[in-house]
Image (cartoon, rainbow, N blue to C red):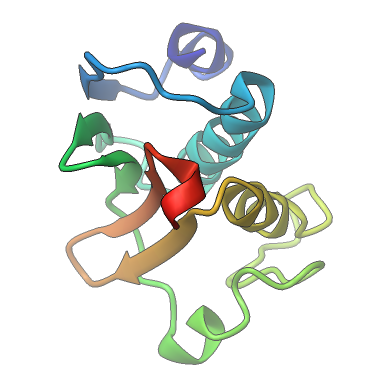
Length: 138
């Protein structure tokens, strides 16, 4: 999936650090959609000359997936509504989309008994999806 999205934006570098030796019981199509939404968001809002960092891990009973980019930080007031439908923080007139990508990603995370969190500083914006490997114990 990374190579597919990167092929649409050859000017962007995506660095992946993947270590998933355990089986992750999930709806692979929906988790792929969550990942695609996060990666597309990073490509849209991150600085063009800076790489996007992707990390996936299975450890300590969890599957963690994060996407990070350098760019303008998301305002604290916008963070509160970021996962709401039709919300678009820092939207520019040239940007397409309805503001549903992060909402959909959040709903997919919750459907998997997981969480989707964001941190945004002057150094980076990072979205992290965390799901228990034993989804019955969440």
